[in-house]
Length: 75
Image 1 (cartoon, rainbow, N blue to C red):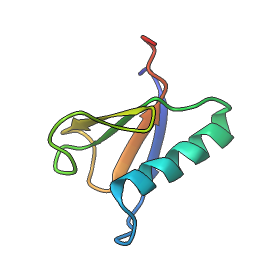
Image 2 (spheres, one colour):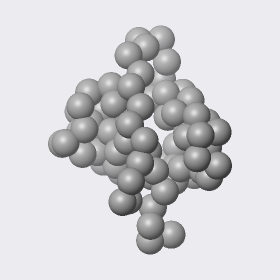
Image 3 (tube, one colour):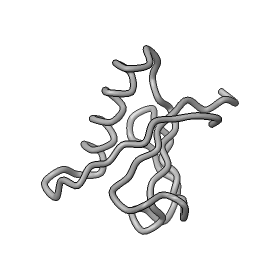
Image 4 (tube, rainbow, N blue to C red):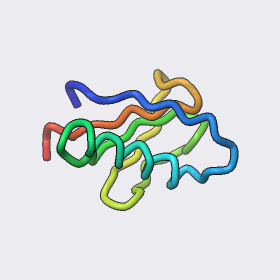
């Protein structure tokens, strides 16, 4: 991913899936394309997983409660 959108969600009432879905909906509205890749703090998840069509990857450089969404350039 060359560029993306950083999303902050401090809600304690939403699940990880709900947070990513909300961020992805905003990304789609703003950029006119669907995000298919999301990086989250490595403490949030320990291994790659999927939320719908979005590949979610742990990363040490992402702060807690932040979501870096974008479009995977290899797809």
